[in-house]
Length: 118
Image 1 (cartoon, rainbow, N blue to C red):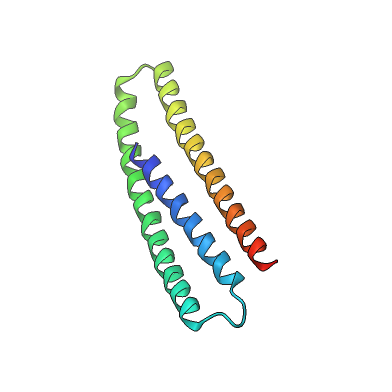
Image 2: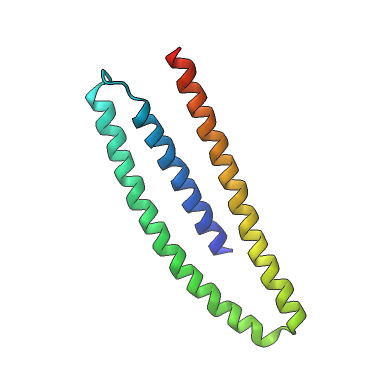
């Protein structure tokens, strides 16, 4: 649901931030100042977006709790447990998938930087 989308957004922003920080760290002392300034600005914007996404996650989480409470009134206990397990596992698996995708991208970026430095 919406919480999954927000979690994906958080993971996406975190991954982009990690790549920008890796790029900043790989800049040599003779890198053009414009490159450093551009990367630092991108880093600043991503940090702001990450904070906004965290706030959004809190709001969506509260809304999903309210929806869960309403669902609990209408579902029998066993169906409610199945529903809660499904929602929890779906979010966890999507988050894990996204995290693995971001780690792969980061690893590829680091490998590219390493190859360029040789």
